[in-house]
Length: 446
Image (cartoon, rainbow, N blue to C red; front, side, top):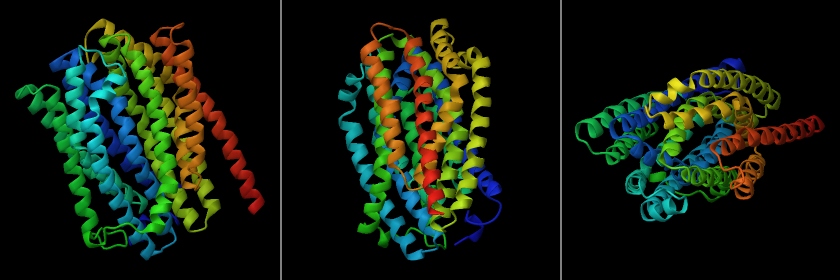
């Protein structure tokens, strides 16, 4: 095992930054190709196609989020065993995670392909964009194996402290996706079918790249096909960690699905405008995702190595870095929102809806960043139920109840947009209370 990748020794600040930076750059490229996808669709195919692709995001994230929650759970277990330097348990945990990934791939493909249209009807996709939305979703989920297995296997590399190779794979898949988007949409005129096909091809490329790496590395976390099976003890642990994370993702995405249905009632211009904003908002998540993954691995490895003081030092540093970076991005989005939205589409009403959402949410990104990074820390500390409960109450229940009780009274995009910073604030308060409780418990243990 490469000792230089372990996060249990050396300057914790450098370890966290060096781990987070490749994740940030990799996600930056991924966001670029997601944005390029929308830019190409909006500029070549128009607002109807952009609305069709953008409005399916909540549904896609709902299904994907559940399965990928288990990749996060398996990553915590693997990082803990690596930190404890237990090679036998590391091997068992890795192959159990891969086996689960294969099973989940089959499940997501079946759910996405056969139940796409009923789910799209459920969220109120307008008939004007329904055929394109349905086609996009069914093609996307037909190739979902690439996405699921890529995330499972990248989670293994990251659990070992390797965030550099996933960066290379994301750069390659991002460039392939952009080239294929232009080829399929601009040259072959395949419409949204071309956008979906380009995405799944690029996902499979990245999956095969990381698989090749894991099958040829000389380490306890090497994938050996003959060892791919379920180890019951690690299956229980992965479910104990992964199920709360999966449920957390589901409840958030379910609430977003309800909100998307509410947005759909304003027509395709609102759908396109909010969809364009969501692509821009994706850039805001880059430092959150990078430092969140870094802290989950850092905390898990150091808890496995019984270095609690070092773990909490890293938590403080990573949280500060997250809040500063995300708020700087928020200010930039607030100032340049009109120019950013107009890159996707030139229709004034579409731009209006996107800018309205951006101007309401962007200055409150520090609350979102705090909630997400603390959620990652809780998983690393072995308390995955805490973020699930917080998100279930603050982000799901509050948003859905507000839509149901007040949606008709305050029927506007501004109303639904304000729900986000309000619920971010509620979850931040809840996390502060929980974190103080954990620190008190630690003081008593000492």
